[in-house]
Length: 449
Image (tube, rainbow, N blue to C red; front, side, top):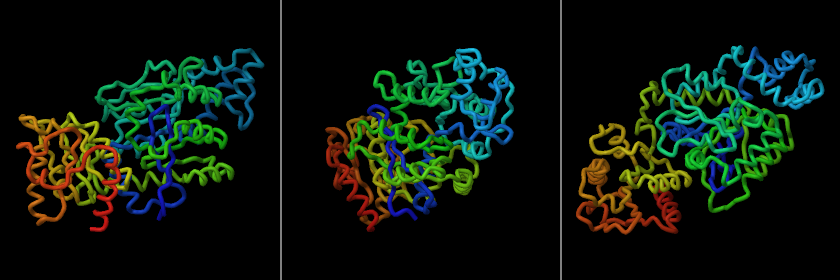
């Protein structure tokens, strides 16, 4: 059992990506429940590294290096790196990196590589609207499109922001190449020099993909198979903390597999100093993760959420769809304080079918949190009023026990006739400076009760 939750925060410009790295210690039951809840609510984005891919039992990059040497009539020796292959081509005929890049399409037109079982199992959960990859290869994209269960669109960072994701809500699943996809020299990361160049552009306010950063800022990252040496990992950490602000720290969930950690005492020491954890057995982690999720939802293709009796819900947040952004910020704040939050991101509207699991979750939650705003006093048919009606009935069954905790987010008149007296006659929190302290006390009250 973990005594505290170590946090690793990665900064891209002004956006914060929130990560908790679990190392060595196995997740306790509370940790598993929080992680699974986040996955079932589509709040987790996997980052899949090229180190997971193998061809005929050897690392994919080793296979690529061998094939490039063979095609360019270069003598290959064991352990030859990309830099060494490029240098050998330079010595033999010049223009090494461009010719290395030119060989890649030929190699991948013929390569027959089975997808690792761990990735197949993870993707088979059908719980990830977006997947990021640090690999430039098309293998993961091919696999996703072959499945046929979900529509996938691919985008790649290319330093020009031509491939930022759409600003509208996702209408399909997205695979994003964060270090570029296979193409001409300079458009994707081949060696460590390229990686440093891409990181420099990622931190440039005018060049980073703003919509992608905005989307990821409220997501939890699951990092798998991204093996970086000590010096490069440190560069990532320090360069991404140039806007470090203690008040901006938010908790999330992250599992990281890094083979080099197990080989590098200095890197282990560094991770301990920043209170980060590591785990080298990602296969066992994914097996356990899939087992637990399938116990809750044996038919993931239905997109059903976790049954209420399994979720142990602390807060159910009800909101008008116009107030989604602030409601999401409140949900994120509560999760950052360790609470289990039901927050439906579908922005349902009148006429939409009312899901049974919403009713079950309202009845199961410890506190019902209606977001009160001027939008909630509009005399129109609204989906959230169904949630309010169920919550009022549930409050009666609780015989005066604290249950409804409203939050007002603007100058709404809480005595308006469309706002139930059950909401206006209790303490109403205001979305303003200091609300986090009130939420902390509320969580303590729930834990005590």
